[in-house]
Length: 121
Image (cartoon, rainbow, N blue to C red; front, side, top):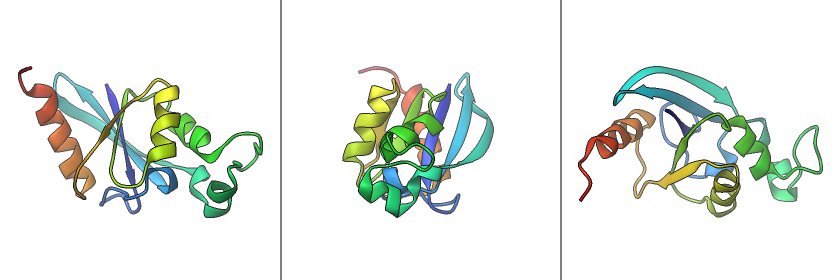
């Protein structure tokens, strides 16, 4: 399973999913993190975000372009402002989990792994 977490700096989770300049992608196997990578979100630029056009593809909205950056992932963990981004991610087939408090990227993935391991109620 691959999980994408939006981040401003590779440390803190981004408070604006659609404008996050990068994602940290975690690969999970058997409830353990087995790898990670960082991906740039070229669609985070404010001028494209505000006008809805993506660089190199003006017919594509910034949220749709952002969803393509993480399209090989299974889930996205987000926080904060994310209405349009959540819709684009879900339309691309990703499961979106919104966190209720700011945290680090590491805290987010640790909480998600714990959530996945918890018995169903």
